[in-house]
Image (cartoon, rainbow over all chains, first blue to last red; front, side):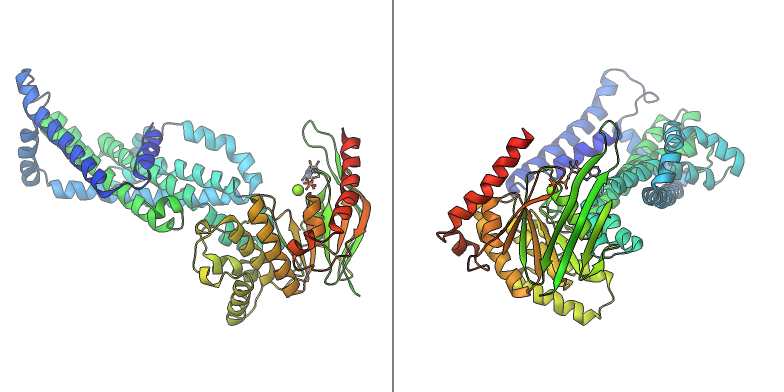
Length: 275
Length: 260
Ligand SMILES: Nc1ncnc2c1ncn2[C@@H]1O[C@H](COP(=O)(O)OP(=O)(O)O)[C@@H](O)[C@H]1O
Ligand SMILES: [Mg+2]
């Protein structure tokens, strides 16, 4: 699902370059939708008699934020979640990429480990969160590890797939030029895998926020996920709303950073160079 | 004249894969190329032309027989032999100069020698102005010229060309053949051109070998005694071109009937 969503945003953002006025029109329309949404959020629930502990209005959510800053150390919680998301994302990406390249380089290992990898990939990774808390206690480590575990697989799978689909003629060309195995990897296979690696990183960026949230929901005493359970306990729906919004913004930030990195790495691709 | 490349009774069988039984791609293939010669190998598709190229490049070993480069048995990839294919195989993440340098990076040439080679080949391919361009910015013909430049940059004795023009449109094909003929004459390398285009073989080669359908053998050798080896267009206007064409076409016709 998330994959589809990502693919979709990607195709819209890379559609053929259009003229400036069309772009301005799009921007105006997008802002208009946001204004419409916020207005509806502000006025429709009270009109329908929905109480603030079910759906707090937009202004109630905004008013809650300074309260959270004062009483719940909101900035510390944001920092805690952001740090865990980034650490888990980097850790999971590094291990995922390393395993992907390793398996790509040794078809024997890949064949032997493929069924286990598939099983692990199907296993619901978030279910490991309570286990990590039992092992490592109520600190930041469990949520970082859950995040890393969730991020790990899409990156491994993408890198492995890329390694398996490198044009064999390109490898033959490198071999004919008497290149050694390591040279073939660094000069052909590794750069050829970049589009898949960055696609995996983009998926990983969206999953990282899920990992952190679950880690904090299950056994956190810090972070935005913790504020969700805390707000739930206080019947403070506005706090839950705000935490969800901030987690989403965190995810968008991470995704944006990865997308920017991708544009830099893949600058040579016409699709991205012209957009 | 020195013999540059020689096949002695070479056979290559591929073991059975899945449902298909064992395939004998080429059988008892013998021929040789003299230094500086331009030889075209003509044959129906699937007759083992690409297999032959793999054997000559040292990427593959014969099931029986001998492949010799400059009198030495080919045991593996060999810096004296370089090849290019129908696909240009340019690396999209490198600019043109970087692509031409690709083959030089396996060896331990000094950096300025590598740069000099790249400049030399850029000039020979008339691509100097595009040294910093990305492959996707170039036309198909320019990309193939760049691929030839990359092939020649390693200073090979022999270049193997596997249908280098077949993915191009008719007009580009004509210009590119002329460009390749001039470049190869200038570099003075021995060339083996694999093709299924009779006109192309006559226009470009000193000698044409015709292969039978699988298992591929040489069934005909024709020396092309026309002037202008470095100008295929001039050659194709030669009055003798037609009779050579008919002669080779006969042989290929005959093969198709055998297949049918
Ligand atoms: N690695 C391989 N394994 C099995 N069969 C192969 C392999 N390479 C080529 N062949 C077979 O050998 C025959 C000749 O192939 P090829 O040399 O590519 O022909 P051509 O280039 O003349 O079209 C084909 O029938 C092909 O299926
Ligand atoms: Mg072929």
